[in-house]
Image (cartoon, rainbow, N blue to C red; front, side):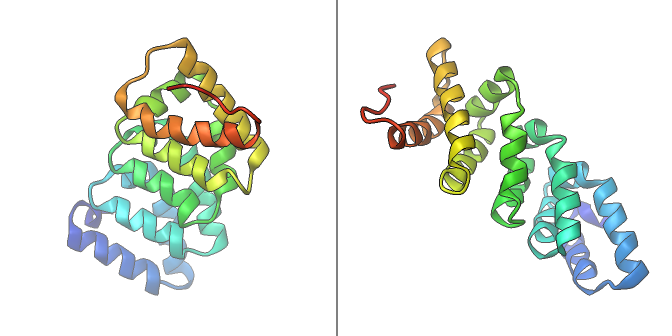
Length: 180
């Protein structure tokens, strides 16, 4: 995984991933899963992880998303890691695993994510992506975030998330929320 520290090295890993077969692929997948969190945070290696999430087989994508969701808060707060968390639902097609992870976060973690410079994008894009496929779960998250918004001081980064929360709540209410 020393290749992951440069643009050319990351491209090399992508090519190896695309062309590896049999035992060679098994070893590469094992290394990817073992180093997934570090690779997701890498300036260049995050592109390799995103590629694996988009082009890997179903088993690889599932195992990788499960590994990454174990560190969903830290990755979402990280500049490069946040793109990888988004790839878990945008590219890997495993929105259900991401939504489930966000549902199990405590209030302090949700507040931190909604307020984070990188993580607020993850939250609002995840809510947008999930609102039609997982309306019950999305409504529950929107209600929690809305309640937390009323209980504390939010930073400027929360604005995008609160717009999506307002839309989701308005869909399920005749009068919609008034948070502005």
